Image 1 (spheres, helix red, strand yellow):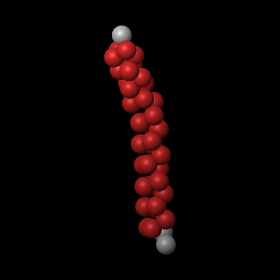
Image 2 (image 1 turned 180 degrees about the vertical axis):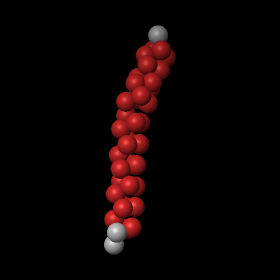
Image 3 (image 1 turned 135 degrees about the horizontal axis):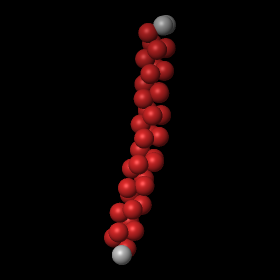
Length: 39
């Protein structure tokens, strides 16, 4: 039971947090790329 609970938490984490982190990271990459390009 505990294992299933942990598993659910991890799947929630990966479906919610990871995309947000990735989007943030990609935005940062995009912004730094643009600012370097236009300097």
